Amino acid sequence: MSIRRPQVKLSDVAAAAGVAPMTVSRVLNSPERVAPDTAERVRAAIASLGYVPNLLAGGLSSSRSRIVAAIVPTVASPIFAASLASFTDALGAAGYHVVLGLSGYGPAESEEALVAAILGRRPDGLLLTGTEHSPITRRHLALAGVPVVEIWDLIDNPADMVVGFDHRAVGQAVAAMFLRQGYRRFAAIGADDPRAVARRRGFTDALPTGSLLLDHVLSAPASMQGGRDAMARLLPPGEPIALFCSSDAAAAGAMIEAASRGVAVPGDLAVCGFGDLEVGRAMNPPISTVSVDGAEIGRTAARCLLGRLAGQEGPRRIAIPFRIEERGSTRNLRDP
Image 1 (cartoon, rainbow, N blue to C red):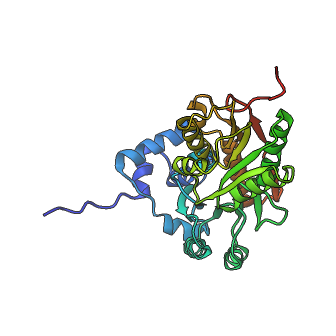
Image 2 (cartoon, rainbow, N blue to C red):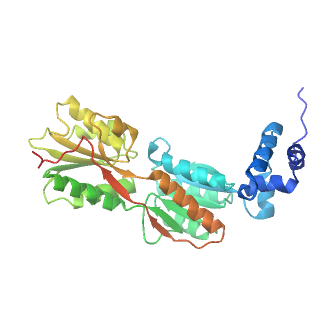
Image 3 (cartoon, rainbow, N blue to C red):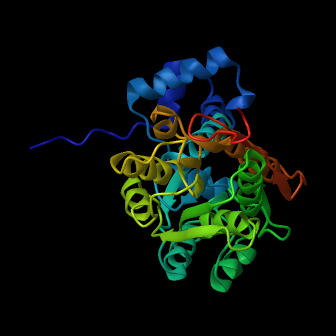
């Protein structure tokens, strides 16, 4: 029969660390207000004693839960990882904990239920991926009474704050690159989530009439196998084709399928992806891509949210730049 040990109290941690109970509370809730060596001593005592703070009681007394929720579509794709990591690190340094929710790419009802469930637990703030939400979700956000920051997109009328970039402009920039390089025939492979759709539409709308050979839609998130299957629909080119894929994973799959059919990259097929992922850099040749500083998106979102929690009125809309990394999978046809 096991014997239940007495619960470790905050006063026990204070005694072990040789500080006042208020100092322990500050380390837990406002670590920036405590000298680093003192904070380290308190954390060591917490770890040694196995102390678990009563966050509910602290939240009731201070009207703060010290919890921020972050909602992303998936963790299967690495594209959101840098943003989540930098966001979590910045919030953690300020004494907040980040809990993760997965909204998926399914019906709007999935996000509605998730947002309602999270807000019902009274987080201090909320991070959402994307800006396309149902009227029900937008109503939840409007009535939440907590700071909300949307990331990886850019609109003029965010629910509260938005940090991201214009996906349609991404597609237009890729089209301009291909046209500048001398390509006259084009193809697009993209996922069906709103951000990928905007990139693909920006690309296809910027092309000359009649020059688009393939506009294939994949189920989100775009995968390497999806890229292979879509590439199989593109006939072997008689002259060079420029292909834009909504992710580096789909672009890598397209290049693998092209190689299996004897289609040379970039001689017969030029390929540009999105996301600047490791798989694209590892391909031979490396994949040209659109690079976005995901870590900066996360850090900026954290600053916005923390500023609002501190009572500051910051900007509601912050644009993060993107750039095209031209690598071996594309070439300038006008070069000798």
